[in-house]
Image (tube, rainbow, N blue to C red; front, side, top):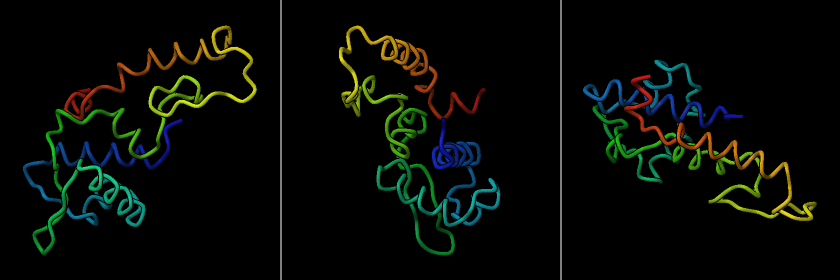
Length: 136
């Protein structure tokens, strides 16, 4: 399940993309316009800034804008930054792999095979960029 943090991060990036001509946007303005709790949003914005997705400018005219082209930012990358693994079980994660402690054989595990198929089907959709998502 998508966490609120990831959902709010994606909503924020969509908002900034769709209102880029009015950029930069203050955290307060984004929170009000997108109905995101302000303190919650501040933490998300800080994390996106640390990962060089966004940049911030100080002052009365300051706020947040893209640090890199939205064409390079995928939904999958945002989910990984904010939530960690995309895979629903750790043994099928490519970036955060962990062996299941109760598993006897990964090669014959039907649960692993099912969730590996799910991850494979899900990833192409999550590899959509912010502009592609905006166009949906």
